[in-house]
Image (cartoon, rainbow, N blue to C red):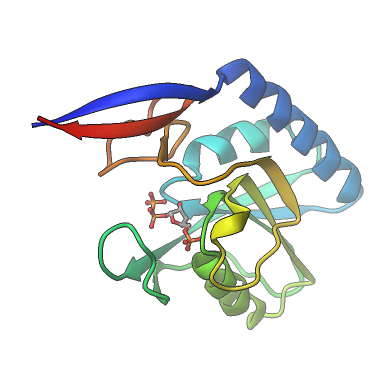
Length: 177
Ligand code: PRP
């Protein structure tokens, strides 16, 4: 049976502090405008809920979902949008909110796809960035924390759909007995 051992990586108090810093930066950058905030389901739902409430700029909100088809936990590069943004994008300042950038394949595809709908601007805010794992070049405009490799859960991030609800971020290892 697989057993979980977990070690805290980012405490909830550090998350809250960093989210407020990001929100302040975003509020300054978009002052006088209105943001169309697009959360990438499912992982971003907790980060986005905190971020949108900490930003002083008016926001409309919508969601997108992408699936990556491939073996195991690795992105194959074949990304399919399974739920698209429903609000109009043309002429809007779009801010995509994501829990993690890993290979970069998901966000590269989402940005390229949404850009075809002629937004006024399109930027990305990612809670976590695993920079060293990129398979395609991708830079988020706002990043909460950068990290090296390691399997992480909590604050929206899952392991086989478990542990998204943890208020802190943990590095996990599964032990098979
Ligand atoms: C995760 C994460 C990103 C993507 C990042 O989503 O939320 O969307 O993978 O990986 P990449 O940079 O290598 O493309 P996942 O497919 O696990 O779905 P989830 O958000 O529903 O957990």
